[in-house]
Image 1: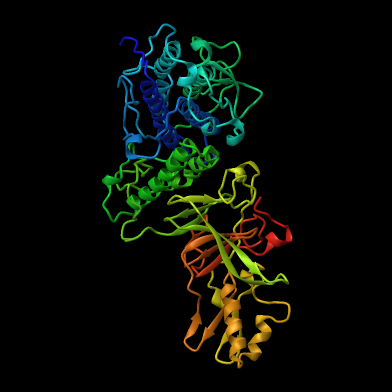
Image 2 (image 1 turned 180 degrees about the vertical axis):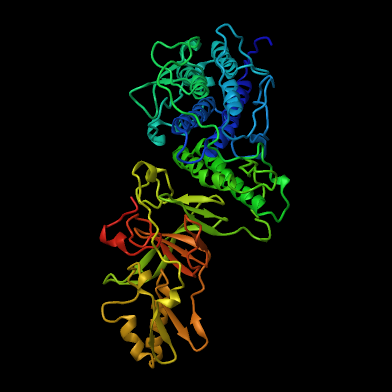
Length: 568
């Protein structure tokens, strides 16, 4: 196909939107192969595929930076953005098809075709490209042509505050974020994408960076990393594309994978199938990733950290699917990467509100649970009296809350738990609270107390009295009323009062409250599911640790006060 130059601003914006979609189209296949590898096996292959995936995320950010620099608006969240697998690469010559498949020789061969280097004299191609490099050269040609006939300032007219910057991403892998403000930096960003995929000057196996997992090594371009997997051997200095890798050998066990059925589809399962429900849950989580990316690339760049964390957190859901039998031969299900347009799980008329605890990771809140900020109203003497809602926090249907206490974007997770190796050991009991409660009987009212749930909020006492002492004086209706009010303010549910017809709980909304310098206060009987699949007792009032230091995780035990935890 002949060289095509888009000499209009809108035309180049369209190409850059296509580049973002193209980079994204490679992510689900890479993730399927990566997550299909049984944990503990093929460590070298895991590192290679993961490094390519992370750098493709970087390429999305670079393409978005260029698009934003020329006044465009990246579109990430939507049905049209997602491709349906198996698929040809968007805007390609359709010469091969990319499936969702487990780790195998044929899958790696497909990845090599995706990352295939272009020939030095290959023409740029905006449509029907043979290599991704040809497509990016068409974008380069369009930008250069625009600036040759239009003021560069008119071309690069975007808002610079929309740029993803190195400090926002906290990226310590290979490659780099390029802030795009003019033609030179735009071409620099595109060159970064091309070299990581194809190699320096399209003639070497190296991309000019240091290896992500082994900084003492030079990094191999994407195409040649997959060559390493196929050969079970690393490249070393002196190797060329013609010689192939002659460095250290490593074992590749093609059989150490979950037997995922290729190109899974939710429509292959009946409406009441547990597999279909799990597929929907995965797709809802992935839709949240797309929504976070969309916001990150459209004026909220600091959200990109959360998106990267979300992308890695869906691993557990993918692996759960890959261990569910399909009912066809010995194959298992897998993630479908379909855009979820419904939030309903089979058999449920409303979204399932729940909080899942990720092992040594964040809280995953699902079902559109409202998120608010609350603080205690205190007296002149510092006594907590009641709660005040400070504000509502805008969230998507699903969101991730920091559990390690060290996120730079509290209350949301930014992946810090991985970097600090957070120990989120879950020791809270799942047995009913009633089995632990002591009972203090008063006049027409009984106070029950489960000390294990205490988070030291302080509503149980004031400068002159406490609920335990007040029980003895509940023949006084004013004392009884005051006791009931103080118990109802207890956020953890440690304290409950019973009347003649049984326990009486306060009428609280179904929401998660971020309490000032304290825990997450979960109200309205929302399920909390531990990382091993067990469910904590579902209660009307629950407080979840936010400082990361509780000895009763995921429940709060008041440690935040002792360590002087602050929101930051």
